[in-house]
Structures are given as structure tokens and as C-alpha cells.
Length: 77
Figure 1 (tube, one colour):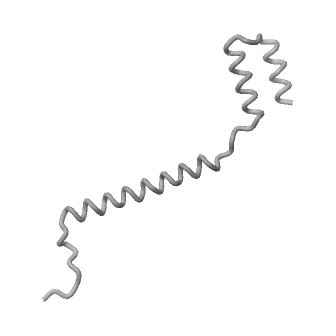
Figure 2 (tube, one colour; figure 1 turned 30 degrees about the horizontal axis):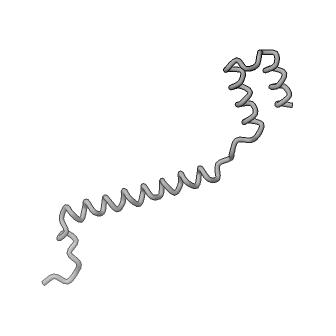
Figure 3 (cartoon, one colour; figure 1 turned 180 degrees about the vertical axis):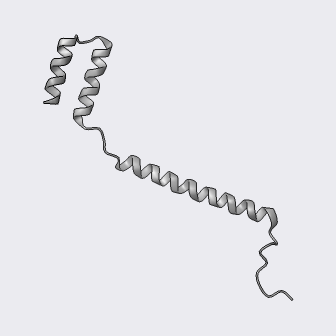
């Protein structure tokens, strides 16, 4: 006579389903963590953005070295 739940009756299908559910839960948690980190990450300041644009302009040859250094010093001060 059997009085308790039968844990072995589902076989491989039960194991596969349990692993699939575990993978889905972990993937969901990772996705939520990534979304929250992107949303609340510190955005680049205007100072950093200005230096990035200045570096790009210098790299493209739009401004010469003297003008680059003068503007870089002005941004940093």
C-alpha cells in the first residue's frame, strides 16, 4: 500500500521540465538585473560628452593641435 506522493513516476520528462523552469527563472532574474543596471547607471556627464566630441573633431582633422589643447583646457577648468 502506498501512502505518500510518488516522486519517481514522472521520469525524464519531470527532470527536463524542472531544469527548463530553473533556466527560465535564472534568465528572467538576469534580464531584470541588466534592465535595472542600465536604467540606473550613471549617465555620462556633459563634461565627458564635450571631451568626447572634441577628441572626435581632432581625430577627423577638423581642428588643429593648438585649438584642441586650448579647448580641452577650457573644458577641464
